[in-house]
Structure formats: C-alpha cells, structure tokens
Image (tube, rainbow over all chains, first blue to last red; front, side, top):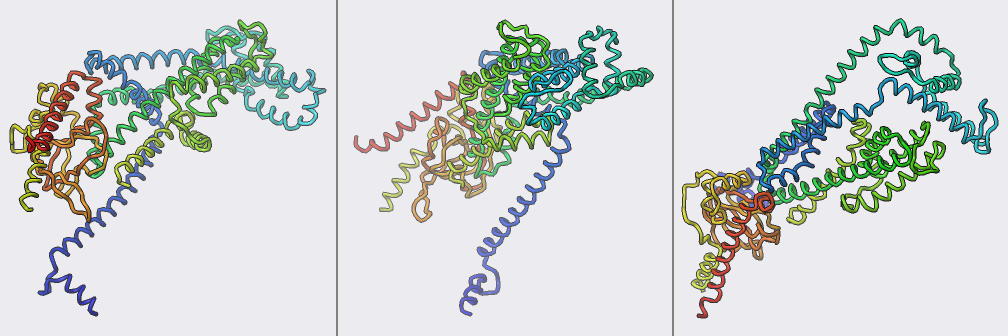
Length: 447
Length: 177
C-alpha cells in the first residue's frame, strides 16, 4: 500500500497534476515504441513491395545488372581519365561511345557465330550420328547393334535407356526433317547440305526406327509459305521484345557514370546520425571490395576464355567453335566449381561430332579429341587456380561449396541462364555487404 | 581549488577552441561560401570549392545527440554550420567532462582525415546543430583524381595541425619559461 502511495506520489505533484518530468519520460517512451512499430511495419512493407517489384520486373534485371557491372568496371577508367586531364564529361562520352561500340561488335560477332537454321539441322544430325557411332565403338557393338564388351553386358539396360533418352531429345522432329530435306538441295540462298550428312540423317532415322521423312517433307511443303510468314513475324516480335528490354542497359551504364555520388548521398542522408560515420565506412569498404571482386572476376573470365580459345584451336577445333566454346566457358568461370564442368561438357560435346581434327599436335585425331579436351580443361584449371585467381582475384572471396550449389540452383530456377551466371557474384556482393556491415558495427561499438 | 579547475578548463579550451576562425556569420551562408571560411579549404578557388561542396554531407543534430563518440574510429571531419557542440570526455559513473565548446564555422575531428585511429573525445550537440561532414575517403579520392585540390587541402591540414601542436606546446611548457 505504501509503495503504491509512493508510486502515486511520484507521479503527481501533490495537487493531482502529473509531474511534467515523468510525463515527458512517458511520452518519450511511447514515442520510441511508436517509432519502432512504424519502422518495423514500414520495413516489412518495403521488403514485400521490393520483392514483388523484383519478381514482376525480372526480365529487365539482367540488362540492369550488366549495365551496372559495366559501369562499375569503368569507374577506375573514368578516374584515370580525370587524372590525365581529360574532363569528366569527355571521359563519360568516350566510355559510353566505347561501350556502345563494344556492344555492337559483340552482338555482331555472337550473331555470326550462332548457327543459322541450316547449320543447326546439320549440327543436330551430326551430333546424333556421332554419338551413336561412339557409343557402339565404346561398347564394342557391331553395325547391327550386336555383340558388346563386358561393360555392355553388365550395364546394357541402363546405358541403352540413357542413350535412347538423349536420342529422343536431340533427334529431328517432323518439321525439322522437312526442313532438312529442303536444305538438302539448296534453299533460301544457302548451299546444299553435303551428301555425307544425308547419310548420317538416314542412319539416324534407322536408329529412331522411323521412316517418315517423305511424309513429313510432303506435309510441310504445302505449308511452307504460311510458316515462313509466321516465322518472320515471330522473329520481328522477338527482336523488338529483346530490344525493348536491352535498351535499358546503356542508359543504366550512362546514368551510373554520370552520377557524382548523388545516389550514395541519398542513402547516407537516410541513415540516423548515430550510424552516419559507420555507414560512410561501410559504403566505402563495400564499394572497394565489390569493385575489386567484379573487376577481378571479369579479367579472370576473359583470361580463361582466351586460354580456352587458344588451346582448343591448338588441339584442332574449328576456330568458330573454339571461339563459341571459349566465350561460354569464360562466362561459366564466374561459377566456381561448376565452371570447368560446363567447359568440359561443351568441349566434349563438340569433340563427339568432330569430323576431323586439324591440330598442329600430330597424334590428335577425332577419336581421341575428347581426351585432348579433358587435358585442355585440366591445363586451364591449373592456370586459373595457380596464376589467374591468385594474381587477379586474390582469393579474397571464398564461398562454401554448399552455398555455391544452392545459389546456382536457386538462381537458375528464378532467373534461368542469367540467374545461373549471376547467382555467385550476387551472393558474393551480399556476403561482402553483410560481413562489412557487422565488422564495422562492432568496430564502432554499436553492437 | 575552484580557481584551479577554471584555469584548467580555460587551458583545454585554448587547445580545442578554433583559433583560426575569421568570420562569424548568421549561419545561412551557402555551402561554397561557408567552406571558404574553413582554414582547411582557404586556398581553394571557387571552382575547387564547388567540387568540395559536392562531396560534403549535411547533417542535422538535435540537442544531446553525438556527432561522434570517444574510441570510435574516425572517418570524417565536421564543420559546424549552426548551433553549438561540446567536446566531452566520458568519465566514471557516466559523468562527462567538458573540454571545449565549438561554435559555428569551427571545425572538429580533422585528424580523421588522416587515418581511422579512435577519436580521443566525444562531440555532443548542445542545441539544434547543423554540421557539414567531409569524408576521409573523399579526400583520398581527390588526391588521386584532382591532386591539385587534394594537395592544397593536405597542406592546409598540416598547417592547422602544426599550429595546434605549437599551441599545445605553449600551454604545456609556457609556464616554465
């Protein structure tokens, strides 16, 4: 009772009026609590809205990310221009022009490297034929599919099932068979398909136990005009759709180069005074770490890509194929662990269908080309781990293999191929932000 | 005894107080004009000051809020645009000893422009205060991209630190002469 009275006395000044100091404390506590609730609710709403926006705008995420990466890579160049006396505006103009020029060159080169319809049909036919031929040779089967070595005797059911599923995936469908027959005699100003590939085509049909090419070609002949028109329209739509999405990339690049610290200033202005200095330190350290990592990974990917191109050309790959595989394998280097696996799969896939190997190394033939590919991948792996990574990336970023696998799976499920390539750089960036933030908060005795 | 304490505070004030202040304005000066008044930027021309003004962070503090606290790593120098700031050293039982009061156009924490060694004292706003913060890494970048501006700032910073060292020496050893 006494304590209750004491408490009451504390709350009033004896005239039944509340003590102003106590009222201020209560108001201050209530305000703090309200502020906390508003902060939590706002954060949840912002995160949810952000998540929904990212999901619905995911087609433009890749161009934005690539534009941002390109800008990040160019920041040191802009500083270099400034240092050498080139005005900032002129430097930006120069970089933007170069960026556009490089994009056009890459688009043009990649476009010419990508096989057209005729080449795709030939590649598929070659691949299926050579795959079955190699399978027979490895399993010791004769032309009629009889015989077989000890490996085949024990595992024939599994291997056959696997081969059948690969065959059903890569074989030409009815429409493609019709097109193959058209291209066989020359079509659409393209040279006729060599007869050798027609033989492959027939062998493949035998493998598929199908003999319907005449029927398919006949069915398709009547529909050619209609389909060509439809194809042109869809091509135009696809090109326009891609253009609409990718046009954002140079603008992201340009505006990030033009930014004179306004974006950073805006975010820092939102930070409470208590965290002002720590936020500056975090921004700076994260910026440096991410910049170094991205520039390092770009140089590493380029070096790996160039190494593949040179070595694959040396072991007898066609230059066009060596460049294509080198580019893809170089990009795949951004994915730790899996990058070399992808390079090997791509290289060995071509080694399977290679008709000849024009290698300067005498003992490499189409039959042992796949071993040469394995050696090339091994050499590049040693070069990457022993030279490129320590010198360029510096081993600053290490991720647990489990994180790598989950990241790649999640990235590819959410954003397809772009997610596959960009998952690891994104995880590295997030990891760097979180670790730097906590490290600095500890240094500032804030946690 | 009381007299001794007052003398001590006066001595410390002489160390911490801004001995370079030339002009006491009304606190509503544009940032470029305001930066001109700071000894660290006194040799910069208008174009260079404009460049610096794009690197400056404007912060507003309520009475009782800390600009920085003792032992925290320093990252920025602060120039007081309006309001009052006190330099305090936290003691036992949460008591704070006032070392100096910083007025508009004075600056503090300039050693943070050199490295991130911990702050030797805390700075607390005594009233509503507006401050301009200049970040160490921005100065480092200036030294790379605009060495002319960066070197002028570094030279003036060295002069400021040298003068403060002389003032400190005089306060410490002046009595023995």
